[in-house]
Image (tube, rainbow, N blue to C red; front, side, top):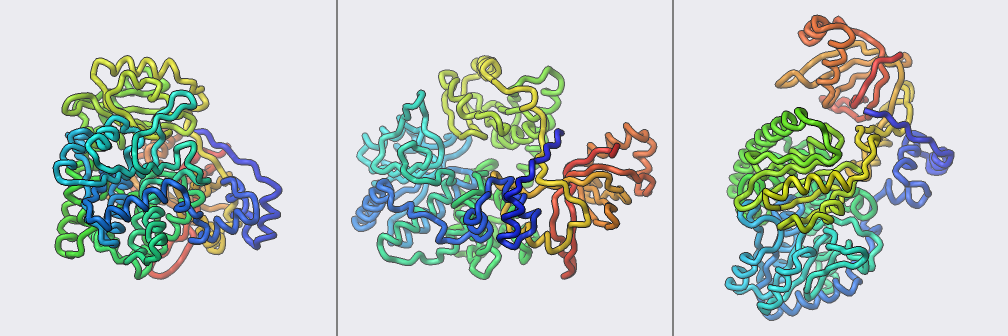
Length: 584
């Protein structure tokens, strides 16, 4: 892992003095592109008034008129969503919002295995036969040119609300036929902020629709929470309006306004009811629960967990989702192990395209993400679907996977996604050609394929206290585009090491530096620590250390984050070590 220390700008210290904040916080803000007083105030104090007037866009107005007419005429509206967390949350937002206006609204979520992502001809035909008058796509539609044309040929109205990039040929965009087309990624969208997920965009849409009718949304906090869950789960950048949605949504979730029984039961079944809900809770507990429905079963069978007011039904669905999520975890671990074994046995490509026919297709994307982290290379994991080879890809920050795969469109049956993640379907005989083309066209340099950790500032322990913790917490929630601040300290004395957890691979430390002792934990560094001890001191020493004998003390340079630890009502500083090296 390569450590990169970011430069400290003089303006950061001026900002610290001007705003009365810690220089450490000011440096962290500067490193995230927040360099002016107004930007900093907006970032540190996210407010609803920071959201722009998105519903003034012509496509929004056009969609509102279509919906108003459909509701007044008693037409049947079908919200056509997707089976991931963003797709489910945006579907729920639109269904609840439109039903609140008296709309005759149902929903359709395609089956991952038999239908795949997005609109398909069979589903369109079924919806027409069921009496649908208006189809409203959310989290899909922008690339379904043929299917959208089919909808219009059948005489149905179509509104598309998507956040994916349209297909392009040079500067030319290929857009589907629709009565209203809302997608901030379209070059002519006319709005300054373009990075919404479908859930955030759906909330903004419903809020604007109610405003146009001079009405209040019943249980609006609930819809805002759904938008925050989608925003944090879909890995969109937590900047601008996304930061407002995520920040305010978390605040509502931790207040008495968190009234949705589905969210509450998911948290309860994991045993954390009553505890603070954070970006980590949503990203690693709530999100995977929602995704498990689409990965291991049919998302449509579980969406009622967020729509039903029957507590017993919601509780039953939460219990079932836990079982599905546990199964998903096991399959992901199995898929990752198989892929690593295969990849490690051959020369690494710049772009890893790994075909494993017996991997469960629902976890291909999760395995690809872990492979990308392991080898610091863009990765596509492919497996056998019902008719074709199907798979998902995850990328590194310097590689636009969507554009690269788009150049190979002639090899694909279906394809969609964005810069950092794609989903694709192709014939088996095209797998090798896809691998060849992606690697021949890849311009990644060796330095692009080395795992990097960016350090905001060198920070000795003497500068760390609860006050600094509180200031840094103003930067939450963390996620894409707003990572947690990372610091480094040299020649830290490792005073104690302890292994805990079910598999005893969770590492606890006691550190001593600049006359100050701090406790810390290590995430994902067990293997590196083991290799380090064996390399430096021998296998016997490792056995002694791992057995619990405190027989190893050394000086190390460490990279870490700072957090506040609360135990039995007592607050203390804790550091999270993400990497280390022996001091020289």
